[in-house]
Image (cartoon, rainbow, N blue to C red; front, side):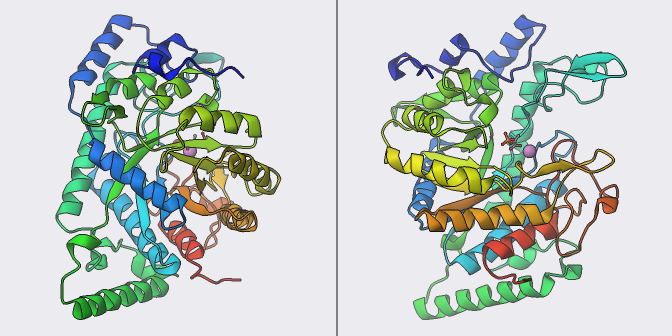
Length: 451
Ligand code: PEP
Ligand code: CO
């Protein structure tokens, strides 16, 4: 595989010389240029201080001193940018992190798939229904989902609408956190309506009580309030797929002498766009953000070693996170060899397990789902394989929602294929609902013993 051009030739648009997978084709080039120019003038969504703080957290997790919880929707939609949805997502991430903090006895770094997760890779450029072919729906950042020619034309204005939704989301999350919503003294703020009816309610409330008691105890012996230091931060992440969007908000910071992507703290690269000689790797190698790379069954040891060499040539701690998503059945076959390949490079990485994307299947009527037992099984295998290899699994990447949807089967309530129709809302991948997500958190924390 050929390596890209040397770093000195890099600039935020240098990827444009290379083949870019998964990009929309906009019919109106002038309108696209105008939208990109407008977005380039807009203020950044995040700051380099925050980005560097997250990189430090990831570095800590690489050393085994923290655990990363990354989660959210498969795709955010503009319609769902509502206060209820944002609060519910924040609550589930906070609750899960509390359970994991308690069980793992390590700080948990929360990273939402949010405030920019608006673009999706597709297996085909077009979709055909009843003999009619139209461009595939690539997410709200690109086009609209109804199956009409008008809706499916990529619209450059949507890049700006996505930026604005991301800003509104981050603004609300920051205000809630600044106002004390994430204060560990008040986990009752995070209770979702149906927590009281959940089969896990007692376990969860027991943990909350125990944490409050510990905080009270610490404050009594130390004689000071732990309020501010115990504030929970939430970082933003999305797949860095739409390169014009990413490029528009990429800034050189003199103070740091580096380029930052300021649309998000943590962009990741999907495997479909991780070709060594492709545009995405060219773009990502030049930015200073901590970043993820998804790795699935098609990843080879050479490809992975090349990715590490190009994306983290100076072996910088906190820089690179590998998010593996093999599926419950295939993880045993692929992961050990890739752990060995990474070790040979001597470069630090954070290993994170995505137990969702390798476990997608269709029911008899064609509904996309995931079985809870496969999600848990891949996660448990991941912990076991890393432990056996003397490696550390330092995080989990989940598709989840704070809502009470029925998109994945199984879990404490034993949802079946027949339940899926009841509250299936995702237009892309099926997400864990609130209870299923909490159950995963309890399994990770080693607290929920059902077998
Ligand atoms: C995703 O994270 O939503 C996704 C598309 O994952 P992957 O590229 O790993 O299939
Ligand atoms: Co997905």
